[in-house]
Length: 444
Image 1 (cartoon, rainbow, N blue to C red):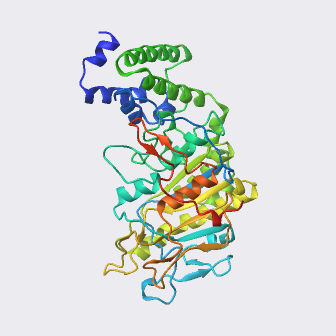
Image 2 (image 1 turned 30 degrees about the horizontal axis):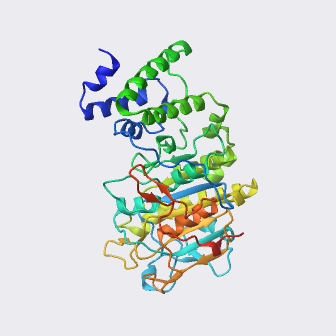
Image 3 (image 1 turned 120 degrees about the horizontal axis):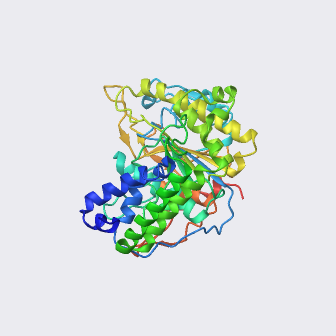
């Protein structure tokens, strides 16, 4: 049976499973699989459509060449971290710390970060209407409501797509520790999928030929892949096959490049590992610094476990030290290397936690008010932007939407927030929807 007949002789579910599995195993190239085989399979098996507008397109003045986006997944409590309310009943047992930024206090769990708050702007006036994790996380990363009819690109995909790559060998967008359920390229072509790395300590896995596959056998597999591409092209349209082939070509180029050293934390000194901390988040921050040094535009580092419905204070006490050490080390390290001014560091979460403390010493979902941090990349540090009331319940000044925050990041990267990209279905979209950049916290 020919490859063409094999493909046409199966139902859709079988074909999708086949293509997804093939993406991870046909060539024996693990790096190719990490570019998102499921996304590739979906693109290959849909009806041909006109392509969305392509980049790069950077029209504005960029103060940030890179973004390191630290995501506290689960809903980080704002009152216990970066919007303390000392003396109020909503504060609970958490104490407030003074910092190197005059008049700016943060929670007791961040003594190392307190020494670097002169570099940081706390946006304390965040609010949202989404209080469920999947919807809120999706909104945070894409600026759009979760819909069953369309997949929106993440902010990292927008920056990669419109801004282009600084290093043509390395991916434009990398996610560290995020799992497989994060928004990626959306309706953009699959070459704008982020490269997911499950563990920063392990780096990029399977980036060399597997045992038993020499160069000759590898080339034979490439030829077989080209035959498969031809069969797909005849049935599903050339655009999808070209995107798929381009993604594999990029993976092969990466696995043969000296830039692979960017993913190798073993090249860092013991002192540097100690500075960032022996934690998954600390390793993620260290790897993020290596990646931006090598020209990766957008790196996301994920910290899980912030859904503190019960034992909030004990849980935050367990989670915060890794963030405190890793983020403080990242800011100091970037600054010492002259990279902080061109690298925007963001700490974000999908919503806050209730000011009221329940009987299990927990805090529940609270989208009405929460905090995010911005540093570097042209950000004016040492300040708090916006505020909540005396008990942390409502935003009382400078209300800031998720779209506004994302528009600020995009604006700092030089991405024009009014630029319209048309999806394959013919609908217009902008990088941050209707968000407005907070230009007053940026220099220049």
